[in-house]
Image 1 (cartoon, one colour):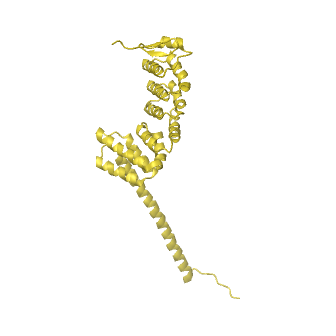
Image 2 (cartoon, one colour; image 1 turned 135 degrees about the horizontal axis):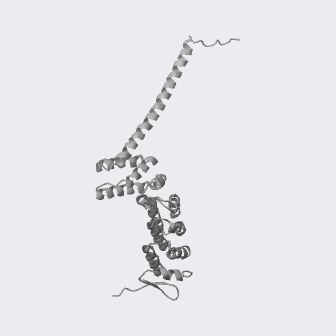
Length: 277
């Protein structure tokens, strides 16, 4: 019976084996290096395109070239970078609007694949009117659209915010949607500290025409001594007059706070007085 001898370090077979392993190891290392290098190059290229796309001092042609590159790449990061163009205001208003319209059309053409980046931008941006328009076009349903907006709005609870612009934009958009669940979503913002937020909420509630959800809450705000805004009381009085809602349960308070140009009838309707000709 023959016994195989162990391979020694001086044997050609041993050296050939090590050489092959070394080559394979080098090839693997070079392959991984190429992959990482390519990823880094793409990352640097994307970052450069994003910076050019949002650079107000760049030439319009250079911004378009950068935006086209981001649209062609189509990754979530690239789409998010494209969305950031909405947050930059170019000094030339006509060109600024044209570029934003181009971004809007491009994002809409991406369809639902752009949703993750749109939601991320809605959360992070200070102004969201443009991405809300995109969301309206690409959301698979009104329910999905409202759910995404509700998640963003929940991050901005009723109360004080240094800049309430985003809150106002979200509430206005919900009002325009006229979704059955919208009234309950915006009603708590009648208690917001910002008068503009409260006014936008009143507008939205009248747009829904959901008397059960809105009537009592609006009347409570109308008769509150803490509410100092005449603009709000005028809008509530006008809304009640237009929709024919009664002030039942609050007649005394409404009479005390009712602005000029309105009166209560016997049943409790708010009526607009005709202006003298």
